[in-house]
Image 1 (cartoon, helix red, strand yellow):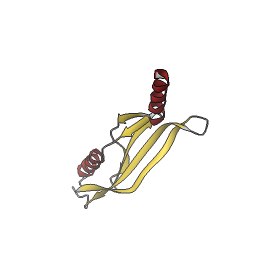
Image 2 (cartoon, helix red, strand yellow):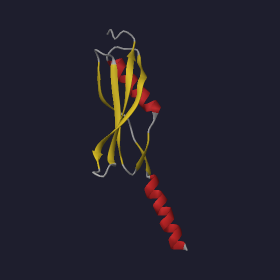
Image 3 (spheres, one colour):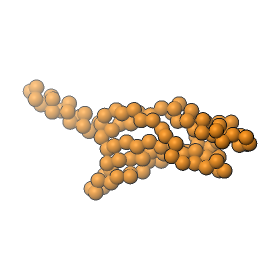
Image 4 (cartoon, helix red, strand yellow):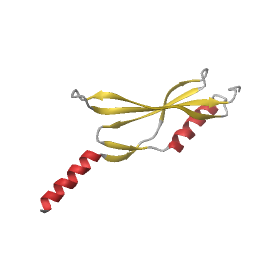
Length: 107
């Protein structure tokens, strides 16, 4: 009976994945277009925990270095598989969020 519980708990753990803190990093954008692109990656058995506040702060900081006043998210979040497992699943995901810089951009 104990072994059955251990196997059940282990199975739930493997299926649900491990909660892992992920940080957003700048992966693209354009000063001329006043856009910033942030991303993070996670594996198939990870359950990513991300901070919207960290993303907002990083995007605003990037925009401010270009002379803009700040940043606002737009376009939602995209998630694409960047390491297919060959069986229709995915071993690694890339999540991206776009931001629009606010203001005139004059420095």
